[in-house]
Image 1 (spheres, rainbow, N blue to C red):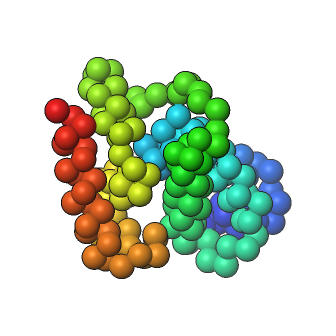
Image 2: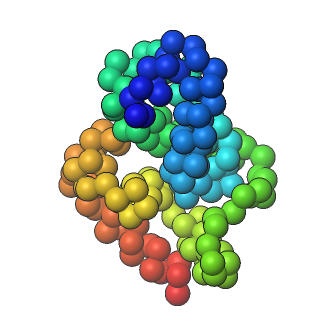
Length: 163
């Protein structure tokens, strides 16, 4: 189903592209938000632009979500690093995390904001996206040991920020 939708979008079918955007936008936002924080919406937008610009280059439509995840992670980390270097103008989140307990969501966002981008990305990929350590390593092009050590430090930093 999704593969056929991708094939139609690759051929320039505007309705297929619109439907694909409806599927991908929340997925990309869920990846970019926790990593790029205030710039999550901008990172998601840039990731979606890159996806649709390069959609015809995707050779295996069934691999869409993995390919999109890789683009989203790259953009989210890029925006997070820019923010860290002071190259962006601070903005408020327009669409904060959706949760039944807004106080808890605010606490989680605050703790995540205190983490380095490389720690936010491993936590997001491992615990939000549910990827294995090996899959995270492959996506970030780092050894599995690096992912494990970043996860260890990220979890410790998150606990410290939480207290």
